[in-house]
Image (cartoon, rainbow, N blue to C red; front, side, top):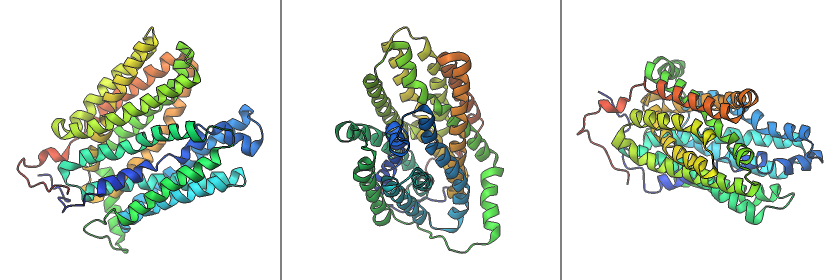
Length: 413
């Protein structure tokens, strides 16, 4: 019988809002390598020459690689240290990164603080979900996860509006970090410190060496857990289709830059709504079943975007597929969360590492597909990858299905 080792006491009414705030702070600093990419390039290189823009764009690449390496270390640290402390450390790193990037005197300094922010984001993503597993009752975790995952989506929409209204002028990337990213990150530090409770059973600062081996062994040697990690890695690869979306719509349908931005905002809103709804559907449908069904539908729908004769048809397929595909995020995360209940911190840390690596691989695959087969090949390639991830997820087991229907499930206050 599946043992829910954390049929916990009430975690408090403010736990979920505090974790939403913490998750909201993710990826705000990353805007300097996206929306503000040319602006940042001009600041440090004095030219928007493609060569200099390419150098600046590597901020994200270096940060992702470093964050992936740190994720392995985080898997070890999560065995020894209290998960709330690691979450707090992550929020502090994001704040330091935001402040440091806003004041960076040169490009090397900017890269260093961008890396610090990336490390913080890795810690926050892993530990927030780990704490959900430790502090929230089993039957409440999916809805909680759905709400938390919506944080970055909401942040993306709000951030875009903030940039358009207040930071649209050249040279505004530093004020954006100082007056938007930094305050949000400091609020997340306060939420993590004052509101998020520690796990009921506090971890000790010294553990036997065998505990580290045992934790990683559970993650990699339990067949279903290992398969989940492989499936989510492939899904991480497939998620990179989104970076080609606006360019495709502009190329095929003549979309303007402003209209492309509106499509991007709509995409983000739909994605967030899909996370929310998916969280509510998990208990009704099942973690594994919902993950597989949503991925199959999304994988089958994605290539159709390239064959739509008009913009309305393409957007209809895009938004419908994205909405349904987003169900897989809370469902899949909750499936992964329950694979190794005694090693959740390590499991979520390793999952983040593999997802990050998958994203890097996905970018490369997308570039090759675009070069060889144009945008049709891009959407077809990523659609196939989504279907492959669904097939792998179908080979996993949902440990929660072994619970007795009448098992006591404490309510989140």
